[in-house]
Image (tube, rainbow, N blue to C red):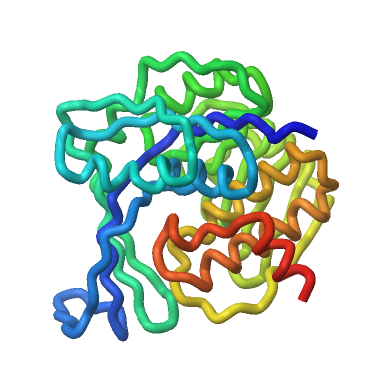
Length: 272
């Protein structure tokens, strides 16, 4: 079958990642850390992840007129994602990420230009994928214009009046869905994930064991892989299993977009 066509409407950031032995407590200074500048943002991460899995991807977003813009978009360009990105007077979004020795993270996001995503017209595609690091109005406009399946990764959690065909949430984000009928993937961290259809469990999967290095983009890898797998007409059990494997692989590597796996890498870890 032809590669699925996916439009991602979402955020793009430059991640400033500090790796240290332990996360600082309030008021504490931790030294001896290392710094990396890595393209990120949940929207851009998921667009890159879909492209690495073989989908044809268009990314809709916004950046600023600043030095961070090219760095933030570099991963999308490298992955072959088609860009529909507007420049605004707001600065390019930035995420300040701290990662400790066991892969736990703290993240503070300055959304900047991501708050100006809007006034776009979407071309027909097999699916439109959104997250909630952009304004409600942009998510709603993407939902209204979706010609195929509409997928929402409801993170960060807040209630938006859309009715996704596929929603991906963790335990906390589940409560923010306006409706929980249809297809909902509930992620459970190291325990894996459950797929619910109209509130009833239809599939359950656990991730392969990996050494966790950085969990920043694990959810983005999961979301992209589940969507691509379903569009490839894989059954629900296989799709969820592949998505859990994608999340585990991403967690085993440092950085957001550099950690996102290919389809071949997912095949390989599942064949072990």
